[in-house]
Image (cartoon, rainbow, N blue to C red; front, side, top):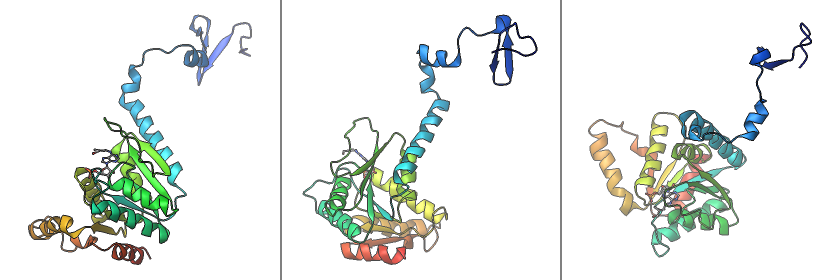
Length: 247
Ligand SMILES: C/C(=C\CNc1ncnc2c1ncn2[C@@H]1O[C@H](COP(=O)(O)O)[C@@H](O)[C@H]1O)CO
């Protein structure tokens, strides 16, 4: 670049900084970007992770922004195809699809696969929000719109942000985590009007009884908090409860 004040001496501008003489760099920013690979430790630093987290939000929001009304269906990754809850998850998803809802799951096996199957076979929108796990299993074959996440907390934002509510089938720690996150968000007013159906009274009854008899009686939750949960064994009732709450 020619400097108008002293045109004979080349100068280099780095933002507001002007460099001349021995301060002139030997390489351009593009050369430094393209020529050398350099040390790779920085990819394991938190500032770099923040960018990856940001990118994950951007990808998730971009993929799901036009989804339309949707319900997140949760349940055990270990529910086998011969378990009655597998058929129930398929049926629930098919009926959600008939009612005009997209179905969002964790994209994995078990109850997730069953729900994606029901939604996909019905011709609905079958979404899988997968998660990178140490023993990668990949998304189930019934996911038609899949987004894979590195970070659980980013993925959990998507389950809540893009769904009108949750239907929760019997499950383990992962399912409990998703259920109690939704309950906490609703209890604290971070989400408004968020129906949660617990499907399978023999599985969920003990938990709901304990929430009332111990947690509520001990004053750790308010009377009415447990009413955010609707327990049923009837697929049609689960769907109609949902549709009524969503009006
Ligand atoms: C552990 C096994 C498979 C793991 N694969 C998963 N893929 C996607 N999402 C998963 C997976 N495991 C758990 N999740 C999430 O948690 C919920 C189910 O967890 P649970 O502990 O089985 O109840 C589910 O809704 C997912 O979002 C093979 O056994």
